[in-house]
Image (tube, rainbow, N blue to C red; front, side):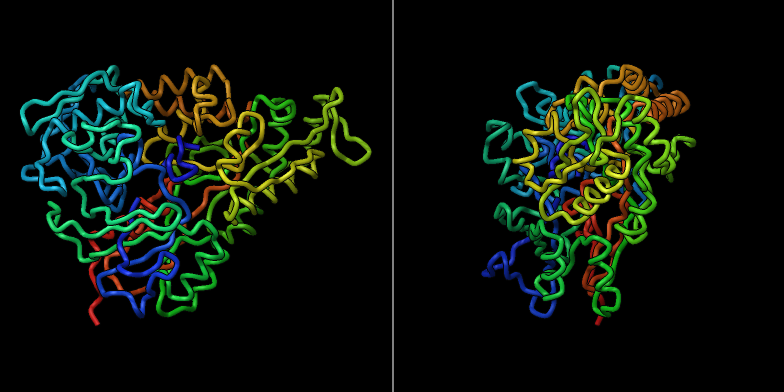
Length: 529
């Protein structure tokens, strides 16, 4: 689980627009919506709209721009910078020349001081940004005149340029407020293609096109993201015409296959579902139990039955189709071997089939978020497979407010994943020093070999060294799983077929706000009639 991405934090992990005079639960559908308005349904919303607190850190924030952004193929391209950075021979200095003539949506000019302010503020110990360790490599950032920014790194952090998709905040507004609680967190001002028009928490985020956007005013003038946590309700509202598009689980997306007015868009992802195995629980803290559960699960059946083929088995945070995946770390479903591991470790089956060791029953709760059908299905399937091995997993549904205080000892059906760089997938998930740090290292995983490898990988500029380090991490997860990874999930979106320019990127876990076919909604054009 990447920091706070599980709630759309963190994460990973954002956009919307105003529907004038219409209640949040009755947005106009495709037959009644204005030709320049789009309403889509998403499952989560951010806690804050401030990039200083983590909003939009992976790009596509709509309100803001980063120095760089990604194209449809996830390759970096200039945004607020006029070109990709100039990198010193030792890999420790990155120089960005800024785009001329850019203004914030309030009319104030953008300059190098805003970039310096943004990065320094995030790194400030007083700033409550759960992802600040992602910028650990920065030693200093300084402005050279109005149009040049220079980053100095502590070490040659190979994926640093990927970190500069982070949105830039205006110093003249955000710098005059409390960074953690000021109005900027809910009423932001940026340089992006859209301006926040309204935010009804738990209901919708509303954006209107920024007429002064440096990239040209978008054709979609109003863009609303309705927050609909329940998958079934989202599908119902799409079918009724209240939504123009929505993210849906495979079984619900399938119901729109024959709808001539809508198209289904599938996005490959790094988005995984896993089960946390907290080291502070007497059952999941036993390495033998973790090893047994890791091979007791039938991942292929989960992909086939739960995802209807829209995904792949997951053996760690890195998908098997990634060049960073370590061949040979796939785990075959082997119930007999799982039982033997438990037998050899002293977990003996009781009269009811559930194992016991030293008076401790092999039983633990597994929490999943209410209304999330994919997580529910995964939790139930995991519990069923675990019971065949003699482990009693009790599934429980709740909100994150209920689940979060229990994460130190209770298992959670979690998620995460980022395609940008393997450091983004693994450092926050596995580093022992981050155990208990919010949604970082939810399992409190503690493996010194993994710690050393993760640190070596992020500090090396040599791709071969990095690959070897991540191979070590993935092999250690076979020997001592901190999580049982289940599936990597393709994201499916059903959208009304009345706009040109819809594409999908390879997506992170944070799906719904910065991802989806609306990742580039500012570039959509109406279809010719």
